[in-house]
Length: 448
Ligand SMILES: Nc1ncnc2c1ncn2[C@@H]1O[C@H](COP(=O)(O)OP(=O)(O)OP(=O)(O)O)[C@@H](O)[C@H]1O
Image 1 (cartoon, rainbow, N blue to C red):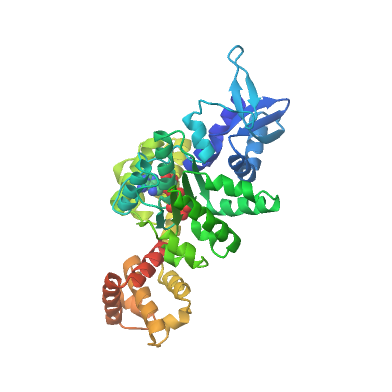
Image 2: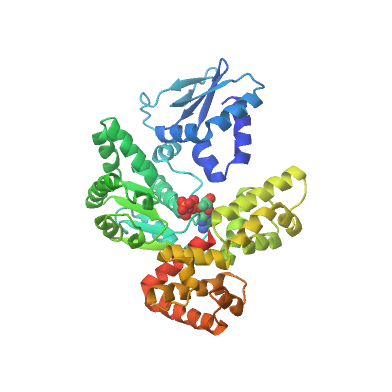
């Protein structure tokens, strides 16, 4: 691989998250010729994604690093083969490549799996224990343990990580297993393209011959009837053939609106597991694990400081850590709590701002399809009173406001009303799954 590309990847690594870098940049190979850098992706998925999301960034970097020598970057599907005699590369098109000794890396790339998302790098905590255990089971017994596995939880809590970990475990145990990881949006766009090019039969064959289908964020199917129809048939074909299906969503299957009932009910046929936002200890453990991966020295008090302040999701935690590492390296200043406060100031302000009573009222009103003014009104009708109690309870749990302040913010109510609301909601959550689900969804929305 040319030095130029090495330099570009080093710079890209600083700009992208680990997962972006490992998923999209690592699988690329490069060759340089006559003012042009040719980048080879292992499959169309990677090629299209990189071109769409990183073309400009890569072209600018190449131009800068090569001091104007490389003016053009092209994206192709293929691989480079090393010629031993002179250590140069020749390009091989994917179609002509019938390599019987498929390496694990190639299997991963074909399956669109990120190598770093595995069970070893997934920190266990109370919030993800069941989801992790179920995923490990599936990794060991695909098709027979639970089918489908439906993992749901808020943004950036590790659903994608677990799905990749399942895929990686299966491929490591059996190189022949045909695994595909696909985001639902991608499934939809591929299907539309196949329809446009009269290749729908090819599309169907592709998905129906897999052993393991990992399909992320199925809430994207909402309202897309043709895609749902196609996915329904794919699901049935795989399920009947006892091939493993793993699905993820940001909410419980029954809560995904805009999905046909027959799909929703199928999603619940196997095992449905939740990933909750991690508690403080798990957030600290995740920070420490990520710091080790980044080879950075993270003092305990700084880990606690970040974990206490960044509560919403793990992607944000990782972002904070990465920012800290980059600033410390750049300025040559060791990482302390004071330094972290300074380096993460805007991020922390944004986190603090997120959970205000006003935000809670907006989120609750939107969730129950009522107006914020209803929450503040004197109406006692059940359709308004229950959401109001939920909102007050959330305000008690998520903000630092006193009970009288919360009561006041809800149309000048008394603090005892807030206490009563919180008791009622706690009682309802224990006995009514709908309220429990509503509450969890709202918690996730507000903490993200
Ligand atoms: N338990 C964990 N241990 C270590 N890293 C984790 C854990 N959970 C999440 N992460 C990391 O957090 C980041 C976000 O996770 P991931 O992309 O899996 O979230 P997600 O739930 O799929 O989010 P989205 O809803 O946006 O798709 C990833 O870098 C992942 O490695």
